Length: 265
Length: 183
Image 1 (cartoon, rainbow over the protein chains, first blue to last red):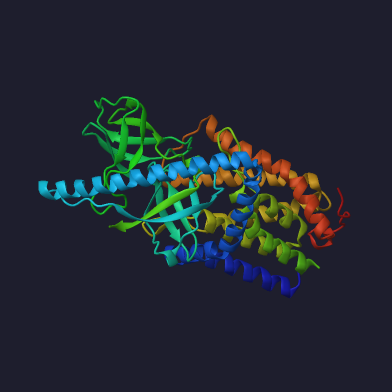
Image 2: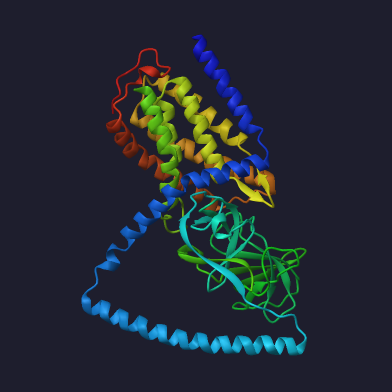
């Protein structure tokens, strides 16, 4: 073996050892850098994918487009009217809460984002969104859709963030069951099938399929209270506690547009 | 030429990561397609020994960082398992190339299957070691088998594509009497 090859081998071994010994801070910085480095490719890929996916949608006749335009216009007017009504209701609600002495429960500050890609890791459930530090996003911010919670931000780069979905085993959410005093911890199973598991419930909990589950909003936690998590599919008591299987409120397999909760109004 | 080929492969690593993220999951249980192990196998077989190890290190860094999870600022695991895994497979593939007298598409396909299944299995065992428990069921086996099977099927396509891009010879591998780069 030539001297140059021996030197290269030693260099590789030292480099390997160096990377093996890196701490969490350095790894987080490197991961954020890698995501930032990949962001132009990811965003270009997303645009290409969207363009390819919209080829079929573009092939509509003029009549179909006119009908669709009319339908959307009508829906827009209806939603505007509904929104005005809801705004009045919100004001009335806030006023009543104040009168009743409850803490004012205002809405969230939301940043809209688009899902760029679902990560290909088999044992992890994460997605990438097109918002980062320059949009005011930080780690551990809840991510929701109009139907419910989808996860929280983990790694954030300048333009792209990674979101850990609630179906991941590592995304643990304090949850409460509608109409009961039952509270538990919600997370995905290790070998995910799209469902959620709500554990640490009472063994004697009387949960019925279809009951809704919301975030409990523990103090100092990531997730605020009252965001829809899912509905109970089945409940079974275990040796020490009860466990319920939930169907997520949001359709996590077909995510496109999401909102990041950056704070309260 | 070899340097150019190494640079091309290194450039393809992030592209493979992005493409595998953008590819839709396979029905019925939403299995993900893994392109990185297929690309790694090609590089480990086609490159000479030292560049193959360098390529393995680059693959390990990208794969390790992409999959790294952080909980309250602490990394769950590190890069060491990925580095050892890809170094180990790079050496095994180099020796296999020597035994079978050069880079062959069959070896690349089989290697891609084995690297993918051991990578996924290793990741699962690492998670189980850290979080406790070892749930084994049919879903687990499907999660291991489907992406590995897809890698096996994709490997010849990537082999042909890369071979047409860079018509390398296998003289740089550990093979003492290399066979021509052939199907």
